[in-house]
Amino acid sequence: MDEEDVVVRASGLVKSFPLTRNLFGRPLRSVRAVDGVDLTVHSGTTLGIVGESGSGKTTVGQLISRLQEPDEGTVEVRGVDVTRARGKALKAVRQGLQYIFQDPYGALDPTKTVGHAVAEPLLVHGRISRGELAAHAGPLLERVALDREFAFRRPDELSGGQRQRVCIARALALSPSVLIADEPTSALDLSTRSEILNLLMDIQADSGQAVVLVSHDFATVRHLSHRIAVMYFGRIVEEGTAAEIAESPLHPYTKALLSAVPVPNPDLQRTRQRTVLQGDLPDPAAPPVGCNFRSRCPVAMDSCATQDPPLLQIGPTRRVACLRHEPAEPMPPQAQFPLVGGTPPATSHASGGHQ
Ligand SMILES: Nc1ncnc2c1ncn2[C@@H]1O[C@H](COP(=O)(O)OP(=O)(O)O)[C@@H](O)[C@H]1O
Ligand code: SF4
Ligand SMILES: [Mg+2]
Image 1 (spheres, rainbow, N blue to C red):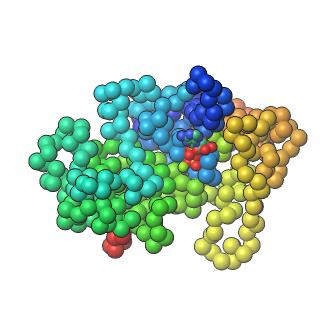
Image 2 (cartoon, helix red, strand yellow):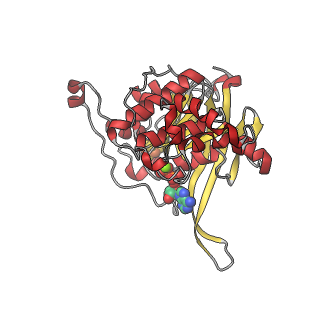
């Protein structure tokens, strides 16, 4: 994997939301939802973004997909800066960056047929005429393993899993370079979740699409991702290949998240030590001095109260932000930004019974 494979490069992303405003509409207090995030998304791979609720995952996903505009930082798509794209240019950028929302119930217009919903992006972007909608809906539905006759149904006739398949088909209509899936299964029942996740994996394996998978569920992210970025309090605190993060986590936060994920081997599960995270995320309107994770960190040191650990490259493919893990010696220039992907996860095929 090299520089040519970079589909999206986000650099120094910052996004705040006002909590209160004065009489003139100026923000008095604000939440820094994303606080200096750098990441790259490579073609044909899945980048998993994981962290507790409120850590900034959705905001990063929306900044990457240009559904929101950053206060600071840039988003490049295939080397072109699209951060301030507007009007027609923004519309063109969004064709290539498709977002799959958490809630398939709210994402579909109940008054339109499924066929209209999946092929509508082609109409909106002027690629087909209204009369061609039905012809284009069929193949899109088949890509998400739904029968063509679903084109004539309405969203309220579908189960949650079927609706999410329709949303994925709609996102695929414009052949995007990147699919950004934000907790794509959390609104679904347990039996349907693995089908949707397997479908996303199969789509990626078949089409070489890049996928950004946003989830609070480490087990899901570990299973599907080539690379994993762990977010805490608006920042990436650790990033590496899925194997590095899942098998030898370095940041205490990553270790705590992983210790809560059950392992399939019962003997191993019995002997594992669980780190229970005490307390909540700090108040985003009043960020702590020193390391943001200090109040919950089981191995905090005195220096953690005064020093804010930067995200440092500590191996060819890994970055960590913790004062206990610093590079032994400066990294060579070619290793300053991780470009090497991990071992691709094994793909499995979506099972037949669609929800
Ligand atoms: N539109 C918004 N207005 C105000 N605060 C927001 C908004 N969106 C997100 N936030 C705040 O930003 C932080 C990160 O939110 P989010 O990106 O949704 O995190 P996650 O997806 O990891 O749960 C949270 O403190 C959240 O309350
Ligand atoms: S810098 Fe200190 S408080 Fe922060 S994660 Fe590392 S050891 Fe814990
Ligand atoms: Mg979210």
